[in-house]
Image 1 (tube, helix red, strand yellow):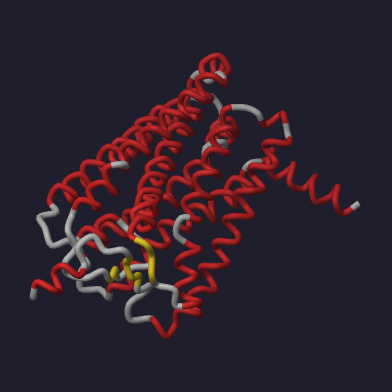
Image 2: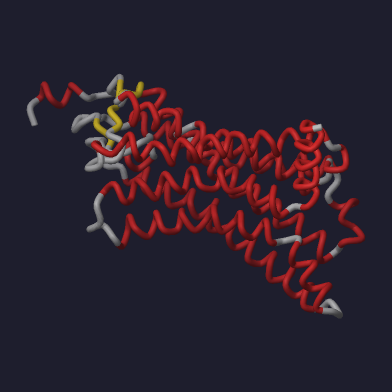
Length: 315
């Protein structure tokens, strides 16, 4: 590569996002379901926040954590979808270098925060089922606030090296990112340097966030199931486990797409690139869309308040 071409992309001012390489002609059609999911995610999570804020009876740890989840989902979806739709609708593929790194930080930071919130919700379910008489004294508002702050700081701090590492590399190959958004490895792979530090740190962060969180959730639910199966009647067991269904469904909708995206990138590399990108985008959008639906339908208190809201408006 000539020296002029090498210097051309050193610390580029912009990156070019290709969207879904190989499916450019279908971008407009693909945007329809993505846009629909985004609208549902925004309206659903705002509705959750509105209902919990309005109803004082819902000012308890479970719904505080649910509000944290709703805010996280809004940030996570909004950090990627508007730019993706701009690519699909207006062919607006350019993104400023600093904006790209900011998007990268928000994606990884709030993904970690969301995982931490699921751990906090698992803790809430554990205390509510295994030690119900002390639930209100253990998970006080002060404790819930400290847990929320710890989850926020952990996600934010662990994601902070991503943009700093990405910024320090020289980019002399190309400034074209074959993706709909600025994902960490998609960006640093463009660097003409040894990026093993970025790669190793990415694996370390995944282990510290996803690995430990999944382990904690599994241990929590082992104890929860032991407590449930010790109940005297089948109806009591089903009723108690029913309080965990929403949380379990939300966990599965968050971790399963992430698992498939990781498995595809490592073991199914012969698949078209757009398949990997499509799964990654589902991982970023499906949980924010499904979480308010899951909790709205499965949680009686929220469903009742929602029905009252629309019934009151209709009268």
